Length: 175
Image 1 (cartoon, rainbow, N blue to C red):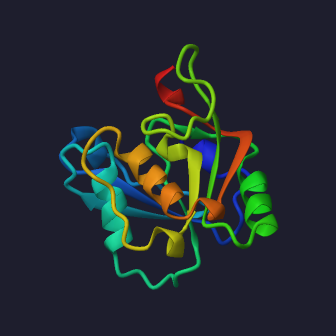
Image 2: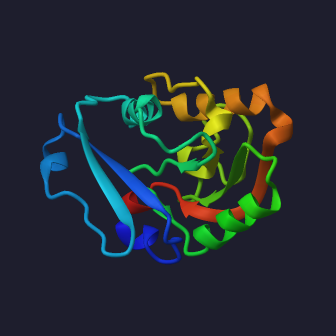
């Protein structure tokens, strides 16, 4: 996964990787990069498909301000080589936006186009401005990422930009 994150990453990019201590493989070596700043965190998630880690981050007292951008990448997804350039372009060209939703490449037969409905928008298909999220948090069920994205979309649809560019690979590490 790190090999898909590093190329093209701006120097100010930081990644926070949450390791689920209830999973044996999560207690392996921490992720280290010489190209980008990586923070490793241990958290007992149990299940919840990563949503507990996302909520933990959103509830953290990190002093990052309120205007930074967030991207949540699941452990089985990969970034497209054009992710960084396109994400930076979208943010630059749409300063009013609170969230961008983009396309992802999926294995054959898995809902191929963006469909703004629950469970059709995957976590890896959205980039969020922290201030746009506000107090929203993830529920602890499988479709919670799609629900979270749709709640944000429905709250302020005019601040959500949809782009059909493929910027990630859905469950690519499982193909």
